[in-house]
Length: 274
Image (cartoon, rainbow, N blue to C red; front, top):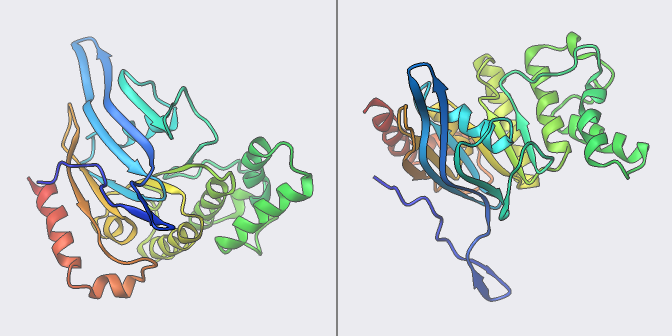
């Protein structure tokens, strides 16, 4: 079992070697919910470092605290103990340095696709001109294939199209860390595959540090540099970490045909079955 969760790769630039920069650092993280029968410990002494420009997927059984951990990173759920920092700065609540894509995109149904993306853009780039902010929102909507739906209300869009707006909105605010809570979990397999491809295409260009929860082992392997496996709750922590060595940019066909694909898949399924 690999419990060493710190990358030791050395990046070389202009002949100078230096370790990669830690973007997201979870130290001795604890989450406790008080109940009439005593404290319920969801997470206990959870430690994880995620590097700049890394894409990490997180898997584990339902109820192990994956979403709790992600909501704590987002600043939406209070930390009971330990710390979470972004580039060394401790988080104190939600902030534009962390973008979130939820399973349900939570759009304003009466607003258009463009207006929904502009909600975040206007807040994060208040000093930009109106035209500049519009250009940012339109650029990311085009990236997710919605150039013909700028002025369509969210309520008129299919579930898959709504999630595309959610992806565009998250990337448009240029966060340091992108947090994804099973963003494709409610979609059919065809739409899911399309949106995985869109997500990874934008990510390959933007290289925003990404942390994604998924129940889908194949999705975890296809998208990630590392797959982090959480132990079952209560008192969940990091149980194992699997490095995914496929080259980037990746194609689904190349991943499926790679000699290591089924080895990785077996490793993750064996962990989940124990």
